[in-house]
Length: 574
Ligand code: NOJ
Ligand code: CA
Image (cartoon, rainbow, N blue to C red; front, side, top):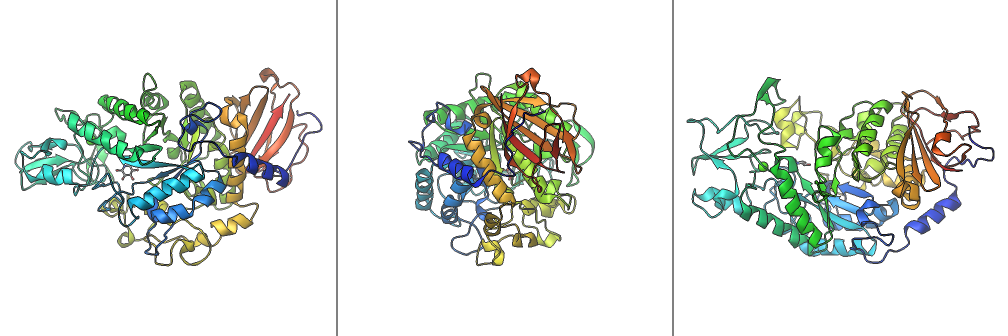
């Protein structure tokens, strides 16, 4: 199958590792530049890392993470191979939704530090060529934001029309049947002004009225405030819910009830309205003034819907997140293959994500009890070798698992308290980063706001740095490859062995060479045969770059032997 003399290593040889490291850390010129020295927009070759500021690193030992904590870990992130960090909201907030209820867009919550701490984070990031992405909560504010406090103060207040106020349908009846995604009706009666206001999320998160041009301009200005401070872009929160039908038509009722006991509805009148795209074009125009990048929280039912978020003229989001894979419950090669093929044929620059702060960690989603770390490496082997820009969620690189609350009284996320036990909330995927095997996983000397799982004793940064077979060591090697190999950065994606029910295999082709990626998504050994002659590789020479195998790879002139849940990444030349 492959020519004699193939160059097989179990992992990358130490010498090449060093060479890789030297290549990656070669300084680029200006940290905030829009185009990299090779002429690409910087974010196309970047690896993004989402971190939850409450849980990343606690510098003042109050049990809650903070900006100084993040700054102190920049070297770790640099060494891992991270180019940009997206920080979940760190603005002043009553913390009902842990920061997604912003009461002031132009400051830092004291629990996280000060604007000076933020400026230092940007400056230290710049020294290491790590860009800072903030989370912009566009759909709603906190009910404690001064805009809402004024809006609520009287029917004639200057900010009344900044939110969505309506009379009830009849006494004690909300304006329509819309429900909040966090439980109950989406309307809250204000006894002072005797009208209802609309909130798609918690009661404390009133929706802004994006049909009001003054609101739009005010929100655009909030982004300018941060661009001027050196922010390289935003992740836009909840863009689907920006607009509502102005006539407030009832959503069609569906059979059954939701997790909170409300009737199920088809949310056609308060989600994904076409006007969303107009707002995104506006936000993009401002981003373009600063060479910034916009990432979207884009929950789409299919690839065609995802495609719309780039904009007809590529004038909306540069990076709409493909969140569809986060819903794949099984490790199924055919399911991943057909999804990736669909994304590829749609065009656009993909943004692959396998988990985030709202979703069960992928480690927990796919763990089978016997191959958990292998599966973590397998997933990394996939989303970090696909075409596009990947976004890691903190802790995935060390195989962090969910630590879900076992009792309702322990739940911190209000959604989990309202929906218990059908909806347990999102605490489990937001636990403190596991830095070491010391108390509280080295996150804080104080009791952390959420408990760490017992597995922190083995799955932590210090222990995994010392173990060349750890999930972390695998991520580090893989990210080094990803930054160095032109085929992984810019190669086309070619799906191969399409009938294989167990292994997902593809080439990333660039000029005369290609990188082969084989992912055995089954619990059994698999023998994989390839015929790449139609792709111009009649008698290919294969050099293994990285595998997650436990045993040394032996000759493969006939077929490639893949261990259960393993990944192989190899360079192919003619
Ligand atoms: C999406 C965020 O990711 C989630 O954490 C938050 O609760 C909602 N948007 C509301 O802002
Ligand atoms: Ca809205």
